[in-house]
Length: 415
Image (cartoon, rainbow, N blue to C red; front, side):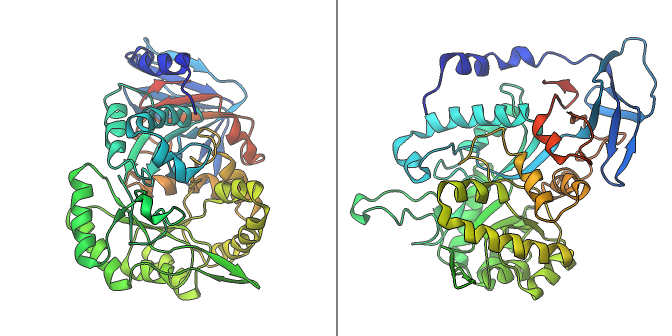
């Protein structure tokens, strides 16, 4: 995927876009959604001073020097949050990107992907592994935080962790070629602790572990091998907690999902299959399921034989909703184009969630999962001013989230 000069120039010039915000901004729109209650405020205004929300309501105070932005027939929402992205992936053969593209090239493309996600209204994200680019996501996160390049607030995991011969261990290549894995190997509890300490040293905010391997669906029966025992995952969770951090897992089915829930991970991503016990534990411990339907749809379109697994996941997802499993929005964007992942909201509603619940999954629930529940994810006084506007009313048409018309991050109007 070649980089065009205008795109690279726009990235390098990004600091010009991030000029100082006016001391006060008033956003005016036809509606505002209070995501915690589901109440629509109409008309609606938000007063922003510096990088924080000062007040919201039908009308707010207009300081003398305030800039007023009238967004017309739109709904104001908190900035969207995608809890499962891969900034270091792009459409094309995933297994060849590590082989054919240098880490430097992939880092530049990750910065462009971050920009695209931000422009689509995603003001915060959780990057679930660089897929073989080591801790390069630390540089992307830090450059965004310093205002050097545009992008969402990021929680990063560095390279994910996998077992020898596991899910991301270049199993499809000739072993004699010594193709590097797309994850860092750890084969027991002691190695997990050692690798986790290395990930944190290199800047990781949390740890991502591959808990299950290749999936199979035969005669309606789903199966996937677990990769770490419950005791090994517990050791990983304990080590992360020692420094105030958490563990998320790629886990599609039992018994790996149960081991993860018992160990106390913060999220089970993909979650095609959850037993009754697993669902009960997730509800009790407030462990999020992150369904990632958008990637499943994308792969099913590319390979129709995978549609049966997607259909199975949909049936299981409806059981998870009935069981009260906490849900956070995560798209697994990367293999499909960055900036298009609001499709996940549409699919969550299609498969059983209400529009409000889907929006909550991609705002306040995402904020809680990322550890920023008291900072972003809602439009409330003292929260950081991450705000988007979409046309019409997303409670009536969730597809409006695919057409974000205004983006503000940290009090700065980006789009």
